[in-house]
Image: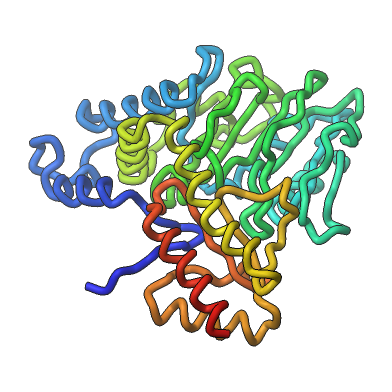
Length: 360
């Protein structure tokens, strides 16, 4: 079989060990004679998987007792609506920090439901950087402050988060959750689609501080309330059982690698390989993000011309590199180096970039 280097932005690479375990258990999970996909979500066999995933995430991320871990559906995009539905009461403001397309989309949904503000934006600079925390504009009646921790399209990432005390800080961490340690207590709510670092598509993880669960709850449709899912341990209705099973397997793999700290060290090593290829190319490759805002998860770059981009991407595809095209809205090249992307793939990409530059 041809070697494939998977740099897809999402759905993205899964650890080979996880796929092999899932394959081995696919038709007979835990001696049940059935696939985990066939089990009742009320069965003790599935409930062990479900609770195991919650417990592992709490352990790996040191999540305090006053936070609930929820498994939701609708992708991270549904959270763009659920958040203002629950928290954007009359007289309050949803305050958004814009660093890319996904934060723009979150703001767009909030505008449909209440008053909003922009705490800062880097759009005029083509989203090449992250705002200085000292320049953020707040309001005394902010319901929350929302940011996107990592920007998949533009390749920027918050290296540290602003300390916000006047309102809950809410973060969309879809593309860098579990890639590095964070202080959960800085946030009122964290949410992330699973399909980049946590598992396959189909489940969204939310980590919610308990005191926020009752906010404005009577005016929110039942299935869109965080409290509904918190009270039912994310079993209010049928959850995406196979996606949660795979999530548990990925969390087990993270623990086996040495936890989030070990994963961060490997991610830094992987990203450095590719950023060095860019920085040492004498301008042949040009990164989109400013150096102090570079993402460890999505490395965006261009060659001298768009025609050069196309030729490079064609050569990469021929050699088994998958998913290196930039997002359709911006073009160029993008290597998504999520947790499960092995260092061997990043070494191979570095070598390809060096070789292609020398011959072109």
